[in-house]
Length: 108
Length: 114
Image (cartoon, rainbow over all chains, first blue to last red; front, side, top):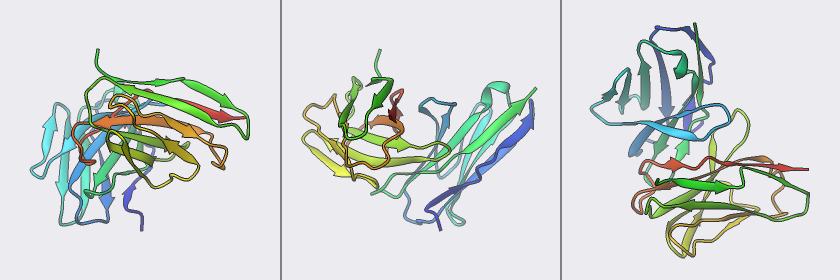
């Protein structure tokens, strides 16, 4: 089993839709969690940290489920500009593990 | 403007040559990292450094070398021992000396071996 797994997609959804991705991790000792966004042929950019209590930033909501060992990202009212690859990052304190990413494509 | 710079943006290398990729940051971050990304894949950690004059191997360090003589700089050398060096190389940095803080990335260097 991979240490961090993401559905590669692509998710192809219409503008205005709500879309959610999950990212599962195997190390229960994982301490910190993040979502990054990566545009084609660009560097990843931090989208949000994921806190135990969950957190929201505008149209984006991140959740952590420690019992089931996954994090999620929800995007509401999706925009064309949300089209990108979304990478999850799981840090079990002594390692840094990036997921392979989920591709999202928003269509007009 | 604070940030991370990488140079060059594109680099072409002949087989058997060593090349050095530059990474500089003016964010006053303690930790710096090098990753490799292959098409359709996630990032894999090559080396990281939490403090000047010290660095640790990541998951795929073979065929690579680094130095950390200054806080601001963390160059990566891709040696001829690296069997498949064509990839997108990303440098990152983070606050503090722990490696699980959020990381900020430079724009990357695309290396192609001819």
